[in-house]
Image 1 (cartoon, rainbow, N blue to C red):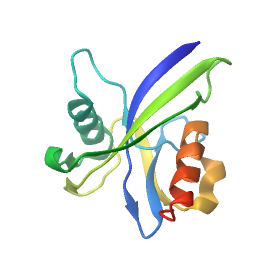
Image 2 (spheres, rainbow, N blue to C red; image 1 turned 90 degrees about the vertical axis):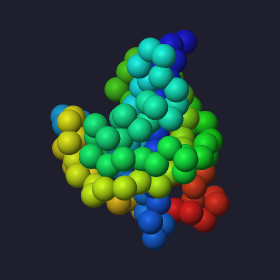
Image 3 (spheres, rainbow, N blue to C red; image 1 turned 30 degrees about the vertical axis):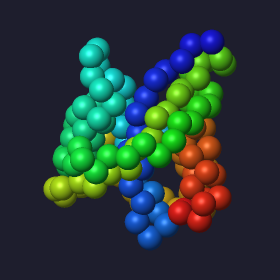
Amino acid sequence: MKIIDKLAWIEIRDQQILSTLSKGKTVYYLPGGKREPGESDATALIREIQEELSVDLLPESLQHLGNFEAQAHGHPEGVVVKMQCYTGDYQGELKASAEIESFAWLGYEDRSKVSPVDKIIFDWLHERQLL
């Protein structure tokens, strides 16, 4: 089994979650990405969110929400994505950049539009009446 280790930012407003659509992709993903060598979770997540959405996460506000895993979307069977999720405040105006084509606020009814690991996160948030 191969594991893809990723970080994600969970931003919820009015029971909708911020999701991103990368250029050339057909499903939404939670914003975030992979660590570069030597990066902490916070450093990597702050960098990824700045690259993808042009906002600055506030390091002191980051809180670990949970870890989730599922079959990686678009990869062969047995490739699993392990997603470590964080919440946190930000400053700036959300704007799609880098590989991100657009972003959207999705509700639980949009669950079919997201990757497998994000579906698990949607379910977890829905059970807690957050989504």
